[in-house]
Length: 198
Ligand SMILES: N[C@@H](CCC(=O)N[C@@H](CS)C(=O)NCC(=O)O)C(=O)O
Image (cartoon, rainbow, N blue to C red):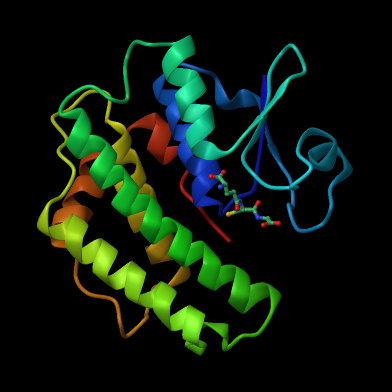
């Protein structure tokens, strides 16, 4: 099995954390540039996006949350959905909304126009980041030690990504609860070994 990733993608990090928490060795990680039409990536994923997971059978799996779905069936224990399922999925959805909004702004800024964040759509995405994090901060995922659930993984991925991409943004609000959640899992190998960097 090998996973194609880049060093920044929050989606790829979700898949990598889930794989590592399920006991998979991330040694087969390959860094690619999804914007450079990498031939190996394109062959496996017509969308040329990360994460792309190539199984030993050669079958490619794409889409972070589909990879998590596949993993939950392949390796049910430890589960990433243990606990209050409704709340886990609800909070995970809120965190995914924040992640999508941040990535959308970064694509606009890096691939189109440095001021893309100030466009009508950019400002809507910014509002999603602020209100999504505010909602998560008011009702944060619960971590009781051991294997984190999916909402913890997604919330921490969102927090680390905003630190990486929007470190000094004046519109950011403090998130002490989410920061504490992040600190609680930071030393786990799945998180420490996948920290994003530019
Ligand atoms: N919905 C996909 C999104 C994957 C995605 O957009 N990955 C970005 C990196 S953060 C990418 O590869 N972008 C290249 C592109 O959009 O062409 C998932 O959950 O895996």
